[in-house]
Image (cartoon, rainbow, N blue to C red):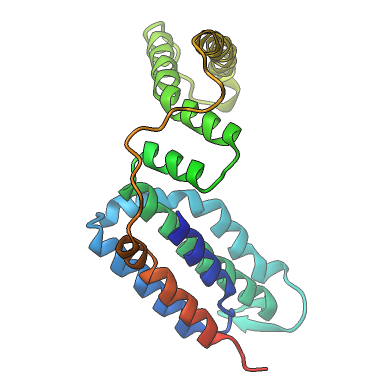
Length: 229
């Protein structure tokens, strides 16, 4: 998690005009993906979360101000083009690095790491419970959809999704009530807001060096790319 934070900050610090630095940072990330043996399809499917950011970036050249240029018959803002490139490059590198960390680390390890990094206890507790009960809630919603489909409900248009929205609202209320009961049961058994951690180990210096190798290289790229004052 520390390596991810350092890498993202280094990528953000790279000047937008330093195309070579972005390319080398992308090469570093690609090397880590290959070393982690993550399939290309696996990574690309999870990059879908970046689509809203990409759509926003692609609109910037059309609505940007200042000097314009003609590209394939379209009048585009130069400042908007730079802004789109900056968002695309940095967001893609950041999302890719996050995918590597999430794909190579277990959820309990990530939550324990958040605790060791002094993330507020309430956040780690909420994250832990969310992960534990997300499958239960998703499974119940799936069973509701199967039950509705078996009774002939097959929405094809937006205005036909009313029953599905009502089912989701009912599921939210039931999930909230279940969470209250679980919390009361845990408090009755001595829960004080901290989830006990088992099997924690000290991180060896060698592991720190290996983990920070790529982020350290990204920091060097950012420093080299910065203009000399």
